[in-house]
Length: 280
Image: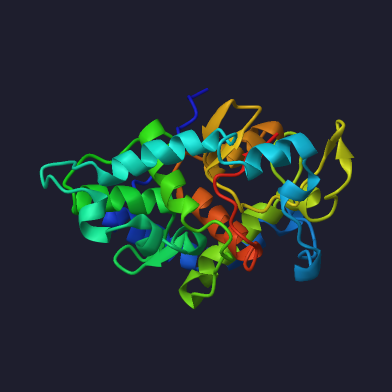
């Protein structure tokens, strides 16, 4: 028996690969639904008036940790991110602040609008991807490794500037990617034959192994998770869920994860950003 071929991860900076992925994703929703229709679950979206942040389900102690910036561990990454924002990098010897000035003004609402459509790549780019594009194209510096401390720190610092602002997802060019992400969200996967929607749409608020099932809105990423004892991205959380379903996870930065992120932010549109949030 031949060995299974590993998944191919597309770089966010590979324009040709992203254009090809975009063309695939643009028509992917109908194809995915046709191929996986029998393996998908029929589920209704949570009405806007019933949407709840996971914050509302947390213990008073965990809420207090998130509420107090002097107790919120995620603020350590925010402080590191501020230092990186002002540090010159790459052959261009340019800092983020040299182009964007004070993040408190220039970065307001930026994280709330990502993943955002990138016309050059013909596909959405998430916040971490946008940071790396700026590093490579503007600072002439190497891209930061996905889930690395420095990338999480910069993402946390930028996302902090959107705290309290509503998530936005109105760009119609994102529609094919929202649909592709929805198809993944509603598709049964893994040895447990579960779909994300079965837990987070149909059974939120109920107990699973003694833990209250959240709706799964990405309002606070990157966030500090007590289980991890560190800061992590939304894609890290998605990988955890897929592993929990005993499904093969996508690679960090893959078009599938970007589509799923795009759908989840659309699903949470109008909800307030909490970054950096704290979760159990």
